[in-house]
Image (tube, rainbow, N blue to C red):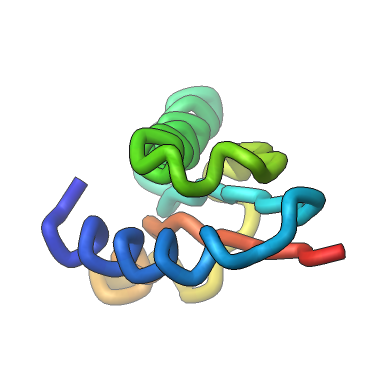
Length: 99
């Protein structure tokens, strides 16, 4: 994981630890269109798992329900025909659902 991503996750952890126990966090991994569908699905799941592991290692969010999901290349936010677009599609989204 890149240092910039770690810094962002550290900031997120500080915010998350104040949320209630029944908060649900969904971590969604995504890829660009490079590679075959199965490879991208696995890669997106691994991205989501890496973020979950980083959050959990802090032990400050263990009171929350965290789920992960890999979407592969199925939900692009930019065209995959440029390097800039591909870079935008390689991402992890964290959805926080307080109850």
